Amino acid sequence: MSKKVDPKIDTALKHKLYEASVQNFEVDVDFINAEYEKNFGNAPLTLREDFGGTGALACHWTTIGDEHKAYAIDLDPEPMKYGVENHRSKLTPAQQKRVEYVEGNVLASHGFKTDVVVAFNFSYFIFKDRSQLVKYFKGVYDALENRGAFFVDIFGGTECGEELVEETEHDDHTYFWDCDKFNPLTNECLYYIHFKTHDDGVKYERVFTYDWRHWSPREVVEAMEEAGFSTVKTYWEGDDGDGGGDGEFYESTSEENCESWVTYIAAFK
Ligand SMILES: C[S@@+](CC[C@H](N)C(=O)[O-])C[C@H]1O[C@@H](n2cnc3c(N)ncnc32)[C@H](O)[C@@H]1O
Image 1 (cartoon, rainbow, N blue to C red):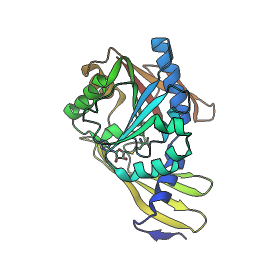
Image 2: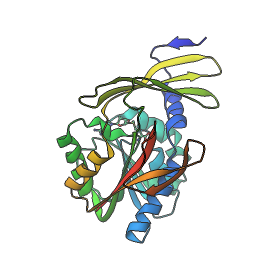
Image 3: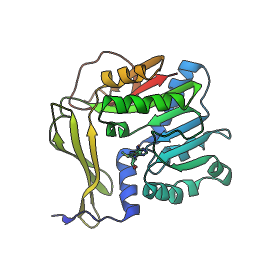
């Protein structure tokens, strides 16, 4: 039996559990570097993490090399405070100078350009109208250097429109991805994240809420092209031979659907 707590959770625990459940920024950064280099022939140095939350990826970026600089943009000061205290504080003083947390809207102009912009964990699904999505993508296009690349992730599959709860066990907690509502006429959807900590058996309900539109890869590609990107690439994850993904993503435009998939889309300026 779990003890239910609705919805209060300590801020630090909330971000720690979230990061342990959904983030794998080292894998994202390896992918970004490989695809950028394949397209432009050199390594990117500057990165902007949109919807940055705790800015964990931006902090990691500064550890790659002495010229690597990153920005993390988010509307909400709470995850940024956690990131400053728990990620930026672990960097060397020189690395700390090369990461900047920006409290602001990703739709605004921030007065700097970067080689790479990323929007991960599907955060751009917050834009429900196509005009808003294209406006955001145009802003990203303008904020990129001439040899710039924009990376997003996306999920789908036959199960993703179903109102069900997916449970994932981690060493010290259970992660619940709860699709509470899915409107098949508009693709608007409501998701919750719940956590259960194993040591005390407490279940924290609705720790995060996402009121999104579920965009398809084709729609995202077309919106990126309309925003001005000259090349947009879709990718697919290799098969581990056991019904799962192998963590290796390759460029592709045609695949067989499955119950659940996550992949990347990259747009080059
Ligand atoms: C799903 S979290 C993503 C966190 C992190 N990027 C990750 O990959 O796990 C979404 C974040 O987007 C932020 N956000 C939502 N709308 C935004 C906007 N228009 N501009 C900047 N940040 C926004 C929220 O405050 C929240 O921290």
